[in-house]
Image: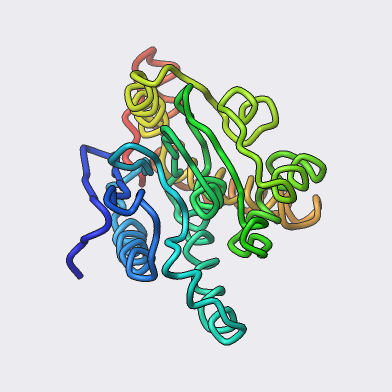
Amino acid sequence: MELKDLIFEKQGHIAYVYINRPQALNSFTLDTLDEFYQVQDDLFADTDIRVVILASRGKLFSAGIDVSVLKQGTPQFASRYIHKLQEYYNRWEKLPQPVIAAVHATCIGGSVENILSCDIRVSAQSATYSVPEINFGMSPDMGATQRLTRAVGASQAKRLIMTGDFINAEEALRIGLVDFVVPDDELMDFTNKLAHKIADKPPLAVGVAKKAVNLACDTALSVGLQFEQLGSCFLFGTEDFKEGPAAFFEKRKPNFQGK
């Protein structure tokens, strides 16, 4: 499939996924979601990629789901398509690589749900955020009631969802919607440095850590602890586990190979 709504680039161990529908405020259609699925399939298969950066081209990050999709809103449409839409967001969490969202300008509705499924969120200082589905007679249905609640707590999630209000980047940072706020002109530079820092770590260990932390949100402590044990059983047999201590004692930078 030729990408029309997205741009997919690779630079070394870093992959860049840009939303690129500036003529439609970088909103998503079902075709856009199909392209995301394709890109995610490529990322699952590419063991050379260690970190993914999700960003966008144009004046704003994304207006969320295209209004043309909302016009199709029927119980039958919801029954057929909502699960697919939800699964797209789930797949960012299932990727072995960490995903960093770099957000500029405006991030609305489904695009807030999009960044909530990423592992780390970096915001430009001038960015604003809103979950406005309530204004369309809807409740969020692509993860905001779940992931937003986990990120900011129940009362803040209710406040944002029930009012549809916009908040600025500093407020988003204060409540935990984003992890970093940086000057607008430093957004991609900061995100790239963060991505390269993670990409220099052992990718198998990063992947196990991502799964373990995700599991902590969904299961009992005893299950999470058991997963930690099993993760160590796996990682202790890797070449990277030998490389890490060796580099430490030899006082050199480790060369992790993902093996």
